Amino acid sequence: MNRRDKAVHDILYSALEEAAAMKEKGATQIALFAMHAALRAYDAGYNNACQVLRGRRRKKRRPGA
Image (cartoon, one colour):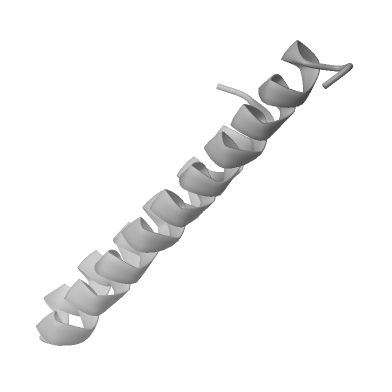
């Protein structure tokens, strides 16, 4: 796991822990929203990283094109 993945992992799990704490206090809807937002942010970051890597690989394959 590289540093970026580790940082994202830590952020995601801290958000999920906060959501679990909210749920214990009875704020279930807010907790679910927080969990959903954390997962979507992680997914968006991962998709963006994949697109950047795909773009870099394409450029390296055809340097003269």
